[in-house]
Length: 315
Length: 199
Ligand SMILES: [Zn+2]
Ligand SMILES: [Zn+2]
Ligand SMILES: [Zn+2]
Ligand SMILES: [Zn+2]
Image 1 (tube, each protein chain N blue to C red):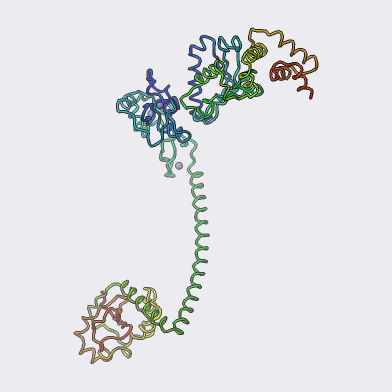
Image 2 (cartoon, each protein chain N blue to C red; image 1 turned 45 degrees about the horizontal axis):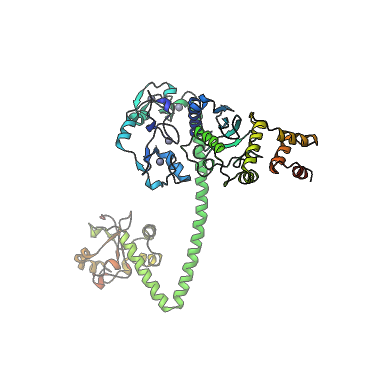
């Protein structure tokens, strides 16, 4: 939609007037054959109703519209116009091509965003500043936020219900899988394979650990210490089917021959460096998983892996 | 009213006011309300036509979507013309329908309607009865149109025979307009018009 013709100084050439809105051409396009020019918005609207030139009714489609020649654009850009905010007191007279940049910073724009200086910190249109009341605005803001918060809480409660539902279904499925696995050997092989892969995935998710002082090993941890380690393993995503076996293997009574006594441990000390150790998150303990340590001698390894607890010296 | 429609109508109103046709008295345009949605046009019957000497009022309604849709225009003055309904004043003119183009203005539309009075299009009729008479008895059509121009549009030519026949029916208690329509429809045969009115 073109510019109000009254805003321009002097006479405007008929050629610069849009035949549709009768304003001065804004962002003009022209029809290909007859070269009649129109505002982009005006001709787009017209063609959406009827694919013809609005002046001579020659067939024209939207894709055939072309930019107007440079000479016409130059004539347009040189026209002098008043500011959109002239009714609000702006006396600026501008070339049409600098109008857009002026409007961005025009001080007389009644909708110019202004920060409230009374302290609420909100940014509001200039013409609303006089009526602005910090307390009222902030209260309104609190009310909207409260509303959103309530919505979120409700959504959260609903999500919890859904999750519990899923958990129940999952337990049921697991139970079903277990039964299938017991009754069908090929299913059992498949399930074993999946379990092994689960262990590898978990192992890969854990950070490598370095033991700086092998001498700090606690080979007979008490129940309290074992419980702490077990909780940490569980939180790190340890597959449930190996967690109990792993925890059994945190005590020297279940360790392989090469580790089972102080004496064998002394003899095999140099083999410790071969171990690929994984961190038990947040604890002075490492996991030596079988899947990470297939290169280690049998007398130094057990399935599904070892848990070694230390007094200190884990990095 | 949409800004663009009001802007256009204001400009077109001025254009008509400054035009030579207004200066020459062949067309006129007046505002009916302040919102620029309704105007009243006036066209003079063109010379050398049965409408000569008559003044015809037009109702002009500007839709919200103007100029993307045409103005709605009808004759308020009764007229006998193949492309105008003798009952409602509705006009059959292509530029007021699917040949509307957004660059047309009130001035060009008024001039087109005036031109329609000079050159009827009986093959694209709005009023089938009038069109039939036009095709079958152009002389009777011309007389009838001239009579209507005299009766409704202040035209100068009085056709005594027609006036008398209308008066006969009026004396029988028939409304004047109804009497004229019936007589015009039955080619001024008093008997058939009477039969039609009282059957
Ligand atoms: Zn064109
Ligand atoms: Zn335009
Ligand atoms: Zn300004
Ligand atoms: Zn404030």
